[in-house]
Amino acid sequence: MIHYFLKRVISLLPVWIGITIFAFFLGLVSPGDPVYLSLTRDGITEPSEAMVNAKRAELGLDLPYHIQYVNWINRVIRGDFGKSIYDNEEIKAEMLRRMPVTLKLAFSAFVITVVAGLGIGAVMAATRDTILDRFLRQLCTLMVSIPGFCMAIILIAIFSECFHLLPTSGMEGVKSFIMPSLVLSMGTIGTSARLSRSNFIGEISKQYVLVASAKGMSKSFIGTWHIFKNAMIPIITFFGLYFAGILGGSAVIESIFALPGMGSYVIDAIYNRDYFIIQAFVLLTGTIYVLSNLLIDMLYFLINPRMKQGDSL
Amino acid sequence: MHYDIQMADVTIEFALKSKRVSAVDQVNVTFKAGKITGVIGETGSGKSVLGMSILQLLPKQACISGTCFFGHKDLYALDAESMRKIRGQEIGLIVQNPNEALNPVRTIGRQLMEPLIKHFDVSRTEARKTVEAHLRCFGFEMPKKVMQQYTFQMSGGMNQRLIAIMGLICHPSWLIADEPTKGLDAILRRSIYDVFWEIRQHYTQSMIVITHDLFFAKKLCEQIVVMYQGEIVEIGEAKKVLTTPLHPYTKGLLMATPKAGMTPIPDHLNPSHESRCKFYSRCQFASAKCKVQFVELREIDPDTMVRCILYD
Ligand code: SF4
Image 1 (tube, rainbow over the protein chains, first blue to last red):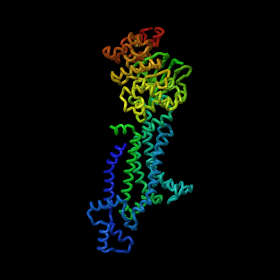
Image 2: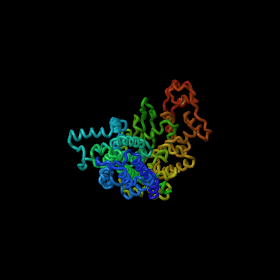
Image 3: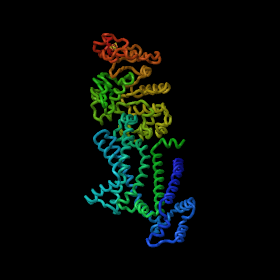
Image 4: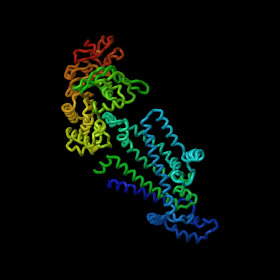
């Protein structure tokens, strides 16, 4: 177990380093000079050459890129993302304030994806080729093809405008997360349901299912204790990928529903060319992604006895 | 109480997209309790379909007509729950391909214990004890360890024995074995023979063994049913059928064994549409009589039946 864990950590380390490099250079290549922008944020000051150079030196932006990168990594590892160029606020404090919102949103969307995806997939497999199965299949296609913002508008129209059940924007507790997480999970529910369906159906025709029925086990027992675990193994890997998609998609959804998460923060930052924030966001979401992948890998290891066998060898 | 399994007018068809394919055609046969009956025939002769139909384990597309009485119950007419109670508890199944027959991610112990718990409502401890005893009986020296392992950690021979235990763990009065020697090498074939001998000695003598392995059938079975294209063409005592066969097809099967020089049954000797006999196109004994007469399964003596006009 520990052996496998270390192996995974080592193999994910280059990915994480790649993300840091990417996050860093994203800042460098984005248009606009952050030094100039930060000095002119009040809209009146026209900084002199000397002021620009002094500020540049203060931020360490006059150094060669690789040294800037090392300095940045050094700070970032200690949790110091610098200050917003735009309003001079600590990025770390702001991120910490906003991270729970994004994580809550992403996790609830992820849980909905897993539960609904597997559930709908299982129902489709069990009622294979009936009207219900066909209807759900169409529904899945629909869910995959409607863009998130479009779905958001439809849901707002129904639940906020028509029935006044849910808030359209802002934070009002759990209620505020219902629509955003639904919208965020919708596409992945569609794909994961179809994936689960084909996996479940693939398992139903395996011989161990026949053997279990021949022993006199009931359908529900076979479904829960035999088929489910087998079908899960290939699906788990995909859920890891879906989580990344959900995390990325949350930025847009947060903006639509005006949720004060990391996503809406970074979108504002993009408008303001506040590139330290963008760097921090890319790095943080990248790190969360790597960690969740590690978690999925470990889950995969736990559920699949063949892995343990390979590990002990 | 050991009942016979009596099949009457059994016809099984598969409804495929464009057409219906007949797998079993008007079969009448009684499998006698206390006897090992071998059902032999080529692949596609309908012998496996016939065997699986007894436990209602055919795919959804199968349409069954006729009756299959087990005591006073018609197995074909049973609802799902009553059928479930028969499976494993009264009629057990030993499947082919032992390496793929067990759930790869469920421990062997759990898979062996679950039918005991389901059928007899025993505690886990009791179930575990029973399983351990059976494992020991079938040559596993460390049953506790085996129970915690998975099928992929077992050898082919071990999986074979596990599959056999799986079929008989609840001590059913009947066992159906579907091609137990299919795809196995000579050593494994010998070991499976020992397994069946063990079952016969200690568990049950009422068995239906579906096989294309004539050597295996000859060693194990007392009665033989020969199937060709969904029909029974010969029924008789095993020794008689496999040494002095009556039907031209059975003769051909015996000629095709390695011992007899592997002479294959010829094909396309006669245009098949000319006769009602399904074997006509491949039959070396076919005559003008075969074209006109209706060929039925006929009793030769109380134990023997054959479907061929040569014996009218
Ligand atoms: S009935 Fe005629 S064709 Fe058919 S098996 Fe007998 S001899 Fe051959």
